Length: 371
Image 1 (cartoon, rainbow, N blue to C red):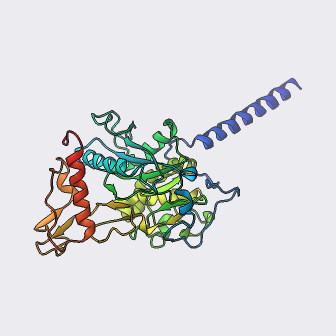
Image 2 (image 1 turned 180 degrees about the vertical axis):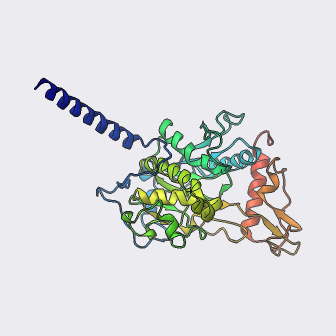
Image 3 (image 1 turned 90 degrees about the vertical axis):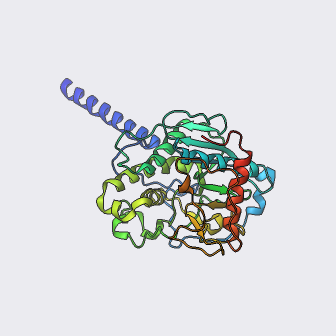
């Protein structure tokens, strides 16, 4: 009888310990290299099941945006930019933060605080110029030469350790230039994200099913987005980020996924992670433009200068061939752009002209421009 009681008590004790461990693990979602398994929605909906969208909502403007413009109804978001301590990332971050400050307090803005998440593992000399959180890089070799994998890991650390006052997060990148005050474009538990033409979940359905099982719903639940630009609820992102990290690592280790997704692998991983947690996104085409393909600013909020801009002296685009006039961020991977870059020749689109003028203004006004 005593022996039976002993084994009964031992069994109950072990079961309680195991349940407690699983609760703690699920709540904190630590970094691990296994496939993530959360099944519950992280949206603000009171429903316990993930929100499913058979058709992604694509709109020009949230209908209640006019309400959020008043000071009493503002839904502030915190802008976060991940970066290394390279010259290349640093000058871009300085330009980005210059324009963030310009528009932060303008009418229509719901821009709150700003953080550069520096994943070099140590402070640099610009921490007093730009609000900075120092994150640790991935252990040596874990990124397999794909440095972008440090981005989700940096967000995991920041979200776990930083005191973030705002309820929403805008994930942005160093090569983003803000061109007007940004309101909170998210609503009703949905994130707001820019749709990328080259993120094609349907095309890679069989590959993505390794990471987004059938029981999670149709492949169309995966939005054609990356992690940036995205405005999303802070609590949702706290749940998405560890899964984003896990899926990124799993995809990088999978030869089929690594080959299929290439340099946008981490973008696919974020889209999958968001879908796994039931967080849908408003696909907001006016979020940003990407010169030289997008030629007008219009109602857009961000210029993303990821592509090189090459033109002849008549203002004709010579993409794929170095132009007589050019602006390409990759020309300045180890050096700062000089002050007063030459403006484009007549005929070059507004988007490119505006970009160069804004870089010039920033470099002329930022103290101690240079490394």
